[in-house]
Length: 442
Ligand code: SAM
Ligand code: SF4
Image (cartoon, rainbow, N blue to C red; front, side):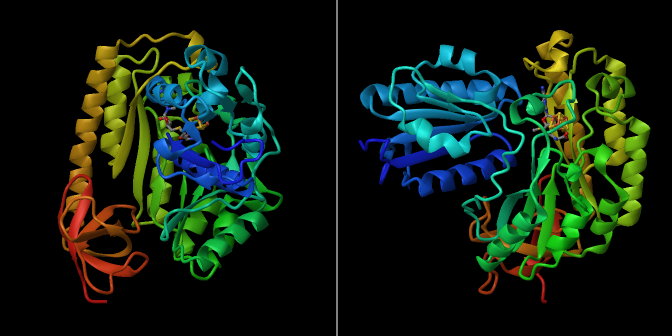
């Protein structure tokens, strides 16, 4: 293999776990490495370097990566010159334990160390090259990421999180909140539009906490909406406490900002919300939902729910089911509480048994399926503009795309319905997860 102090032509394979922020970070890593002379490998077998960009949000996510590392250890046994690197949140979270469990890893780099990856990969020696310094100033603003999809692109607008919810490891692994200057974001979005991207998804752990000098998140949405060629703007994840009037106004008045909001609630019990340090009560959250629906009548809502947080009693859990019935989300991401080292809740313990967490999780999933199905069925007979993404995962010869509400629409292919085209789809039937329809005349 190539000498990595001179990586010209060395091939790197990048595997990504976790959230959209990690997908976007991998696109930044790809550019850092390309600029240093690396080429992309199509498979791990073809690679001189394999990098796993990891997630630490739940124990299960970490276990998956450790399992993958054991597979890769066998590859490294056959090809000792192969370099293995662990990037991202898990690298930041538990580097010592990690190096203990997987001593064959060559490089460990946290989310603020990607600029130094070429140097870390070039180091020779028996011990892994580790760089997990968190850097308040690092935004990678000058590294426009390499995007895969021609239709939709992720654009990171802020990094880190200052909220410190009691259960969450993100502030510890991604560091303090920092926003990317609007001019850098606008430049990136203009370049994407010129490349044919039609939809941008603005990313940040608390994306609506965005602020750079005079520009808040509502202002940023308005600036991006002026860029020709971009037809749809979305963002994730906003925090309920940062849903300002300016943001709601921008969503209501800018037609390019799509009527879909992922608004994580976590629990429907005030006692749990306080223990989680979420910064709002159930009533405040419900009032926010009312304001949003009044301002944006076609709004679709999704959420994140954690079941079995330490101290969650049956009555707290019932309150979560009641909140789900009250809000009637279009979709919910549901999780069993996973104790994370370094977080404030770590010391509290884990009072709900695994079996009980599983029971509660099944109950929230079943309830959400019912609600999603009813909400999707309510769209039967209506028409929606759909941005075509490509072939549907299921259904021979069918195409798929998203409605403004971020629902997947599946419909019969036709000549002019290519990826990137905006078509109108008439909904004819629905499942809990998608709308099935036909192309309507435009
Ligand atoms: N910043 C976003 C917010 O505040 O809503 C969410 C970021 S986090 C990557 C995504 C979701 O993972 C959270 O909303 C929460 O539901 C879940 N999560 C975070 N820590 C967790 C833990 N320790 N156990 C289970 N789920 C967790
Ligand atoms: Fe984690 Fe809370 Fe920050 Fe979201 S807002 S990333 S849940 S600490």
